[in-house]
Image (tube, rainbow, N blue to C red; front, side):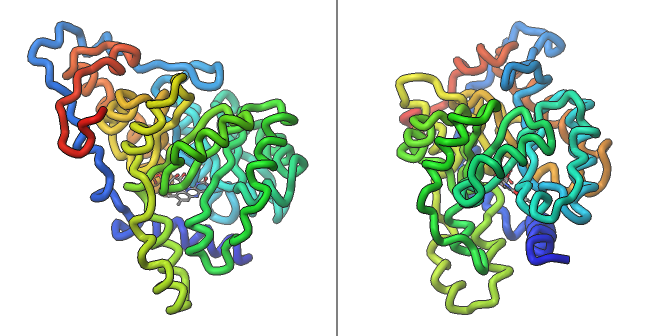
Length: 341
Ligand SMILES: Cc1cc2nc3c(=O)[nH]c(=O)nc-3n(C[C@H](O)[C@H](O)[C@H](O)COP(=O)(O)O)c2cc1C
């Protein structure tokens, strides 16, 4: 097993451990819908279909990026892909770096021929490998878009992580200019703040995925793998660094134009999905909640997608909104921390 494969395996095992979840630190529970005692709609008429990258999807729910399919995580991707195809939801692949470096066959498209599939590379990898690497990532899976992950805090926490982030924005700009699929950009659990969002949009990034604080905590995961006592002490204050998903959505909804936003980071059920849509997201992505089902089977993933979708529908029913457009107008109760919404 190579170092990268070992790291990916550690990530999967640690992400399953509840102690690396910062869900207590997100403020989803502060977003409360005004309940409707007279919904005046039929639950069966609630419509959560949506369009993403020009394609029809059954729900605004993306299976978030987890593995690029090296080593035994191939089975995880197979289960995710079969489920995504069956349920008609998009699937974001995890970093393809290891698979590409090791020259492993990319089978994901064969399991999900009609699914909206997003490739994935890190910002620093794109800065080093340039357009050629990005093109290889896209072509190898016939991707519908390329997601570039921006994870400077995770890299700082990681043994031998990338500390040189010069040239990343420029490399992203080149990808936006020269590749024929949309470029998307995401964080991994710290959030994309308004300044970075403006920079990314100005170079042509088509969609932003928030990946705010309040879900999987990549600092604690990396520090659990870091043997250096000194490094662990240095990084201690950064364990709660970042903006929560709700805070990111609140800031980015102040932009003049509505943005193409995917809300992620701590989204754990369909009520959270509804909250994100109400706060201005067009799509949502859940990563960790699909991990355990994906290790189990494709039918476990399908069941999870159905549960989250049904929770979204029931939230809409309970607020008397039968479409995602109408959900955006649902009344919220004033909360002490987020009363500016
Ligand atoms: C096991 C695991 C592996 C991940 N690997 C990647 C990756 O390779 N690339 C990436 O962009 N994000 C990766 N992520 C980050 C997620 O896509 C997501 O941004 C983050 O975990 C926050 O979402 P969550 O709280 O729903 O887990 C990974 C997440 C998990 C749980």
